Length: 300
Ligand SMILES: [Zn+2]
Image (tube, rainbow, N blue to C red):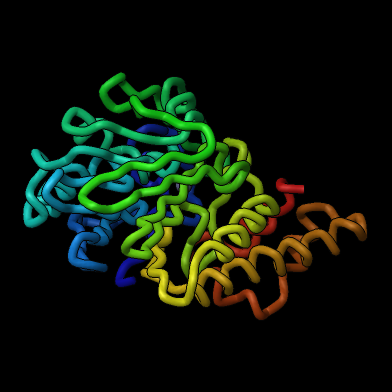
């Protein structure tokens, strides 16, 4: 991936006045609102902008999008959709979860499409949400920007000759996560259950949990094979060994935090102690080790 991820940053900058400097400060000067486009299969395209990874399934019946980046990326997303048939072709938008770096485009593109998500995504977008860690506030979305089709456990869409399966993974990154499986193409979009190569944000305040998220990832590892192409919520395209490494990191770092907690160490003491060197590669300027320890700590 050519640029650093800027998770939730736009929302932070545009909505709150009291944003204090944080781990994402260095990404605030991103002046290039464009998407890079990668064909995964003849029908499936990855679009990478500023927020979560967007996937498009195109065909005779129209276009299905998975996630739609930040609101301020909407015109860039429309431009990226032009070679795929344009925004008029949009039929479905799936939201993998409520965060603004995955749903902001609903406010512009939602008028053209049916938005589909887990029940809890609609529930959260109906009211004001807060992510305290980033001092981020998200106001209620207007009706056309809300998912109008929601589900509880799983659902299937039959579109463009593809079977699109949505599976809810409970208590993961949030309380409303979907993973999306293109059954025929053997491609999956993991939503924010997978940050490929760096410590993830896990939104414990929105019902997420690092330990359950690790279980959910293990569940998905059992559903895929060596040929499956994995679209992470953030980061470059992946295969099964990448998701296995991510799972090992979740489990391994959680064990280290648990060991420190069992010794009666405070959060500050654990952050001062840090984690094993083998996890250093996962910091990558996004979620640093101290923040990751605090997220894991709040999951116990
Ligand atoms: Zn997220």
